[in-house]
Image (cartoon, rainbow, N blue to C red; front, side):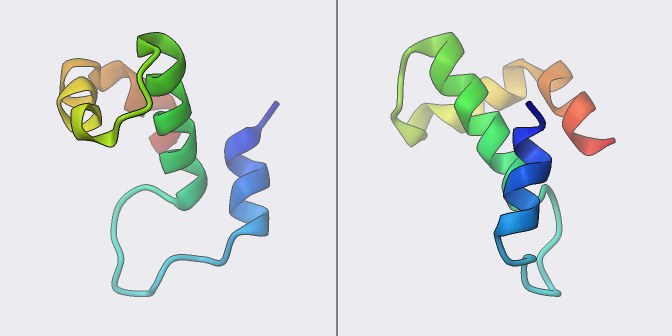
Length: 61
């Protein structure tokens, strides 16, 4: 569905000093977390991402 690319086209580019994932990549990461864990709370996302490093691999390409 290329959600990441569609969001990156519609949303403004991050500030020039910002480093890391794009807004589309962050949205896909959050949606993946919500769907796999059935939990929409942001407080647990950081630890989940650390436990699932392979999720980030396709997003960074």
